Image (cartoon, rainbow, N blue to C red; front, side, top):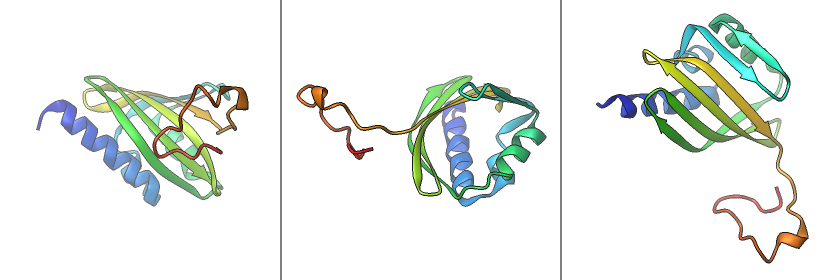
Amino acid sequence: MDPDARTRARLEQHWKASERGDIDAEHAIYAADAILDYPQSGERFRGLSRIKTQRGGHPAERHFTILRILGGGELWVSECVITYDGVPTYSVSIMEFTDGLVTHETQYFADPFQAPSGRAALAEPMPGRDPDG
């Protein structure tokens, strides 16, 4: 298996483990000294143990729907919908790999919103997306 196919498979395993709540399998993709950044809140979590702890203590019921995974080499992007207690949030995860492990991840989160009516004549619904957010 080529390295990119192996990384894609590991990312798919990561997101499936996230969905089923398997915290150990979810975090098997990270290096011990990995960094996780949440730019919108200004938080940085340094080290696998802190990353696992902050995710493991999340009070909401979470579900993950992967929309697409793109990348190659040391840089991979996952676009997904994370549903917290039934409320969807769009997320982009940018992962940097070194020696097959994530050393830096940046996650961006955005809530859905209603499209302005003035753009209706210009836009079409994205496949598989709810136009009402």
